[in-house]
Length: 248
Image 1 (cartoon, rainbow, N blue to C red):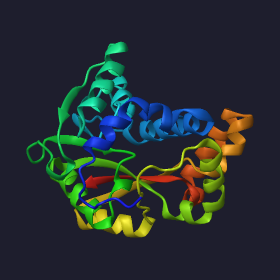
Image 2: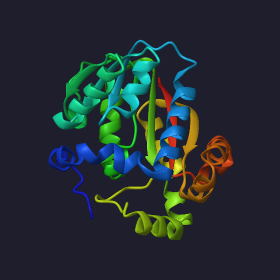
Image 3: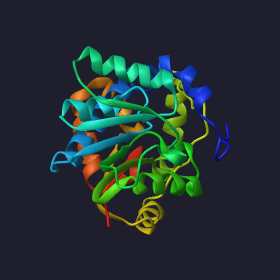
């Protein structure tokens, strides 16, 4: 399926909300990816004492929950009320607090330089390169000078090098994509962020379908391999790469 560059995702994700967590994080590989993703985010944010934090396209609160549990003053923004309601329920059940906002990433409902940290995960793959740049410019606008941006992208190299294992996995599990996806290359993405005034400080890989077989036999082994994979030059075959940068 090909996405319209500026399409309204509201109807799709209103319907998708109830099955979102299970479809992304259910099953053997989904559980592994969630763990590796959380570990990487903790590593990237822990060295800093951030003030106000924005989770863009927060969905059901996958990252909002993590940031709130670490003590961040976090605002979760999403386009859909159904997603926000699920995020609120998830945090409330654990006595965690966050602020919530409904709005579009194309025009974030916040003033310039409102946040010390802006995070967005599992989202930018919906947009082609030129629209990614528009969305990222909005994230940069609401970020204070010297503040940190943490964003992830689906990896073009992973898709290209592991196309057959990915195809087999999706067929066996019925987890084929319901929307079109856009895959990024490392260098092109770094240059895009630098053109927006973001100096890249760190880059990590997360997950990869080559970890599926190890995960069947041992989640601990697969996590160890995933950590090595994500923090070395082997990140080129990770399913996603996460960039952390500072606004100049």
